[in-house]
Image (cartoon, rainbow, N blue to C red):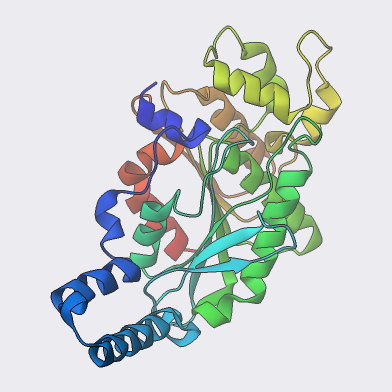
Length: 323
């Protein structure tokens, strides 16, 4: 698997390109100050320029400006410092809402710029995007139900505050990759039980959907050790201990497809990537059997999750608009 494909799993490569940094306000202000000859200016000139730049910053980052699109705003959707999101508002009121869930083997996240390029691409298509972070598993606390609960909380927050960012609370899609796809699917299934129709669509990229079926593949078909270790950690499964099958089944979305009020699903998986194609096929079969509207698309090659987002984004954009 390429380094790019591994990024979504273990955070090897930053998804944030240096070219995008040029769009951030603080660097624009620094450049403007340099061009204005700030060092050689009088104290009065310095104060005047500082006031101007401060005013520009306040305007660019105010809620009113954000509600018209532009730079993201960091928000807190829960009490934990890790329960945060970057909101990329649409420029048009009543726009579809996308909750973006990163992967990382249920244990890796860096900062809210991780999926900035994907978030900006979605925003440019006229969607309001919530790029979320969530609490991670540890040696004391496994991934479940900690992480799906955070995704559910973030989705509820996004729905409750959608209008403030030009989003439509009745048109929400969850988009998750790798472990984030597993969490997105679990969150939608629970939300569907509690609040039917709360989510209109789900997009999965390389999602582990049946942890019970995946376990025997570790070390044989799946040899990438960071994922093998992350899988054990997520399920609190000690090496040499019996496999916690009932616990793993509880957190396998392919085993719990909604039986009514099912949202629409769009599932992608690389043909020869880290997550076996059989995981996507099991999810597709389960949804079809439950009577849900679902489409499975196989991506040629071995790229994983958001590493192939650029190749499938036209289908994703079309799917979100169609909800």
